[in-house]
Image 1 (tube, rainbow, N blue to C red):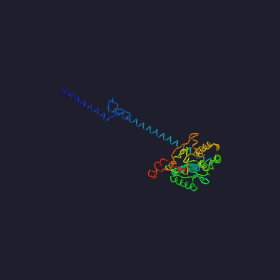
Image 2: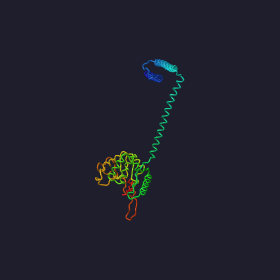
Image 3: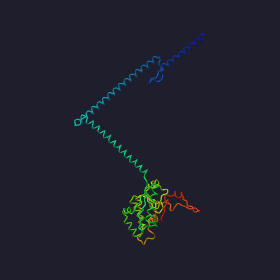
Image 4: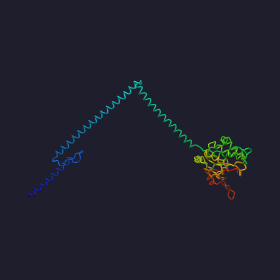
Length: 353
């Protein structure tokens, strides 16, 4: 019985000890308390509490020292500001000694600022004006039309099986057809050709070779288009098919000499420089005297002769101009238009030959 009571007392004592330890663990923090750890080897709860109180006192002291340091720093900054204000006052006073009062100085300074603002505003206005010009330029390009040139100068007594009135009617039809397709038109004349500095020498050489009036005019048109700045030119018996104004604007971005009917110069686009270059190549390859002429002297044969003698020479030749009507007849004799044939070509050449 005694041993049984002793065991019960031991168990009870052990349980109370455990409860005391748990209680201390609940009320006394053993984790990190701003760097302080509970000392597990402390013999009593009071020692642990004393350690905590001492730490808090030390922490309060550190806080007070930090606050004092901040106040000192604020006082130093205030002193620096006062010193700057004194310095500015001295500068203003110096201005006064030079005959410029403090108020005047401040006003002048404000005026300078106002001038700067005015300058900025002017820049903004100029920028807006430039933007407006750019917008107008873009709008102009959007509404711009390409220009198709042709050349007409009446031949005395007529030519090509047509009267003067017949040529003028054809010219009017040419003008309307291109304008209906979104182009502007310009008719060049002998007057334009004579503005070229080489007109007299070239025309004299053509006369020396007994070139007739009509074919001399075919060379004149090259001189005329150069004086007008280059660009598009067609015979006035060439009418547009798929070549509308929008396509013309796109194609004219290139200044390369481009003949759309191979060596037949009935539809060409080139820069002013290229028109002039090819013209002079043609003239250089002309015979020196009538005795050396083996075939008719025309600008068509001169253009072909460049390719024969010197190669393509930087030119581009295509076959995009239809050489005849787009009409066909069936076996029964009914006439019909071949639209597929027409849309495969940029224009049609109704040559007088």
